[in-house]
Length: 346
Ligand SMILES: [Zn+2]
Image (cartoon, rainbow, N blue to C red; front, side):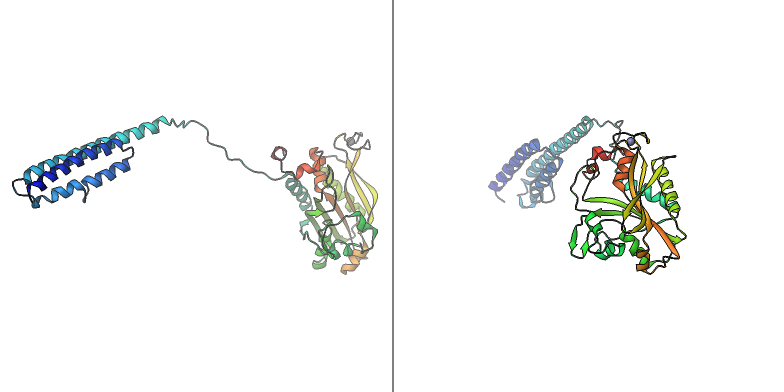
């Protein structure tokens, strides 16, 4: 080691002192301070390197370089520590300034709820479950046979025009009613049968306040020995009272459906005027809520049920219509528009 090396060591140390001081001054993160520390004072740091190289310096100069390098090391370590303390304190102050108010109430999670139609379906099916019925579901894409033929509606039967049908293929419509479930179930199960079948049905209807191309029906079927029209009426009376309230009266008017004989349209006391007559019930005091009748013997015979021994009744109702009457809703489209302002009310 010559004199020049000794001078250059001194220059280096001076340079490190100056640069480290500027770098520490600039550092705004503790992580950056650690980097500076490693660069000068770490195991392979520049100052550390000089201290380890003392043996290569002439003996008489060693104490001088050693002393200066040690002082530099202490100095750099000191400013790094001071800055670290400062940054830590500053961070704590920032956290305190965020002013977390622990007394504020927590954010409430928004709970969803059942759609009004689902609620109505549940309500109606529960009434029938209470009377011993079981719930059975069927396919929405149905075979022509089950949707029409098996229900006494052959291809040229005029009743087919009552139900504007949406077809998937020639022989496979979207079911126009939930009645096919009756046939499907009777084919595979032993009598007696008491079933209720809720589900979506499809018609080629123009959409307005009382029509939709998709709506919901609930079908009911009871087949047993000695079932009569009286059982049908009594069952529907229980249903009407449970849905619309104690004392609600119903009325059966002669109707026509290909799959029941005799058939009856069922009217319930207008819920708006309680039978006095108003604009909702067109002054009649009554509103039609469902179609019903005694299962046509042809249908039973087709499935292989002895129609002399067994008789049955069936009924079908529109869930939207029941919900509209019960909750005084004047437009069917509200059910399907998914406007939460409407749906949250129920
Ligand atoms: Zn009325």
